[in-house]
Length: 212
Image (cartoon, rainbow, N blue to C red; front, side, top):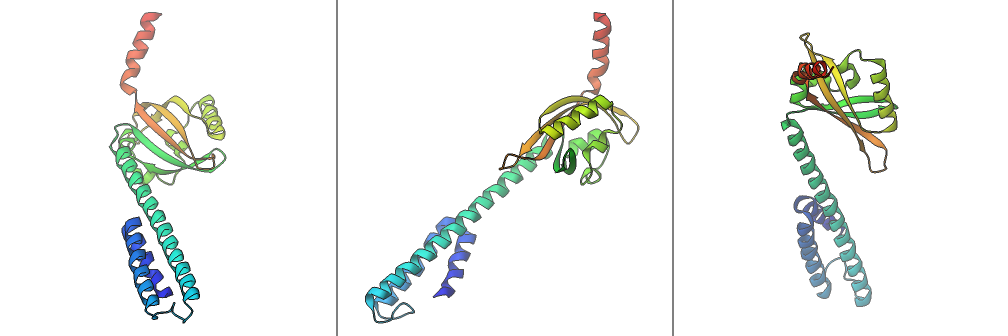
């Protein structure tokens, strides 16, 4: 009788809750008919005992199938949401990287989109598995201190950063750093979006000169 469990489990994993329900119905029907006719593993001659064991078998089979189906369905939905998120992030025009928190104030880049690659002049593969702070080169110590304080506190931060590209050009970008909290409440990742503001810098300087 226990050889029927893999059938129920396979139906649950392959077809979800509906498949688990149909498999449980089919297995239960066969088991009930066999027991009533005095055949099968649940038939021992004692009707009351046979029915009790049969009910226990049906309950265990049904609960196991539904639990597996629920877990499989939740995993499928989670994968779909991740795929949708990945597609959206890849398609945005702003540079984005996602970094994992590996220690107090320390990050490791796990994803960088094509827009960030074009902004910084670096391939995404070169940025992944690296400390994202290295992408910005040498910065003002006060800015570095603000960034580190935000990382340690798990807070959002919006700053303007001047980034050197590999080809020697200097790019001014507005960086919005946002924490991502895990289920337990601790910050597990940071997401940074980069908006190129290089073209607006001369205009800002000109406006400041006019005001003066």
